[in-house]
Length: 90
Image 1 (spheres, rainbow, N blue to C red):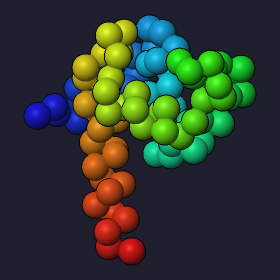
Image 2: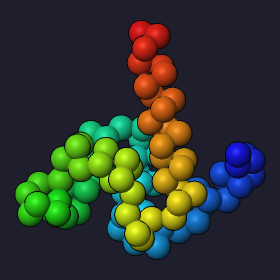
Image 3: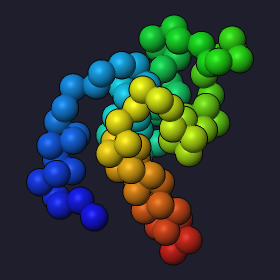
Image 4: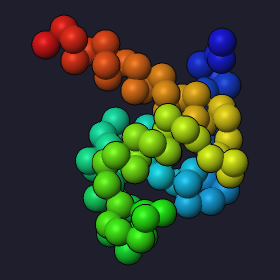
């Protein structure tokens, strides 16, 4: 398990590529919808060649990618799990 200091250090690192930028945006907003809007504002298309969707953000977090730091992905997945836990209590 990562310490708070390790997590902060990971989040402070500059993204190495656009996929890491997407993951950082998700961690920042805790929203696949807001992250999708960010990606669309950059005129980036999905792998399918269509507009980027919230599902594409979820898939990237779930499946990962070779160019995303495993530590960064682990933080994003924690955010997903926290959101799931909180939505059950509403």
